[in-house]
Length: 141
Length: 141
Image (tube, rainbow over all chains, first blue to last red; front, side, top):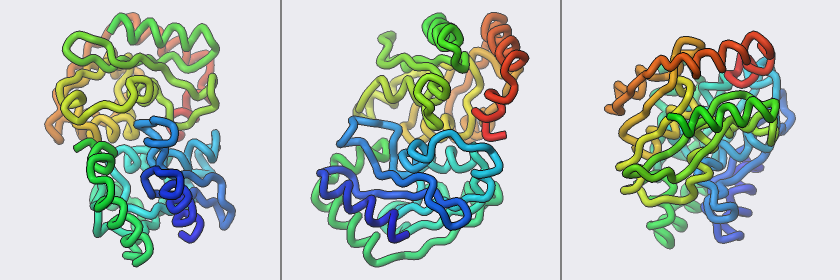
């Protein structure tokens, strides 16, 4: 989660949306990513998606032994990607500022752990207060 | 759907996975895309995602008046993207070769229409017969 938080802070320092993620297989980081809406004008590269993209093409067995760490509760799109690849465990920095599709993940058998990490919460609270329109765009509102 | 099928055939001709999609707002195509697993080594750019990416950053109101056309039933990831952006209508070429998360879309109020188009079915059947490992990789199997 430290690596995910670092990616989120990098994104913030670039003027982007401060959400970061890492895909980890047996203790090894396969891919690190952060939201790319501002940096690349991307509508699909949320932090989790960027981590999956940067991990590159992996065999199904690899995903099925991996854990996705993300600083914020995953939205419907990122939840769907987790389900597509059968990632069995998701560790979430916080869901106070945004509650994604955790119920759907659990319903489909994914292990979900929410840390309510004060640093993750503070990062998002500061961002939402500073750039509410950008934040709403990112979650389709 | 003709434009989506054309994108799918372009992808096939490039050696890629033959699934195409277009996002349409009030009769105007905002973005066209096809699966980019082979062409870009992408794990997140399914046809639908590529169309959304190519449509660029749009206001929430635009998505909410748009229709997504896709040659194949949308997987969990693409379904999640449709839900994130609140796209109210999805027109699907076929779901014979792969049945995605249509039930979830309908449950969340999305209008889903399945054409069972013979050209879409033939395209996927030929691809799956020719490159089964690539196809399974694309759907996380």
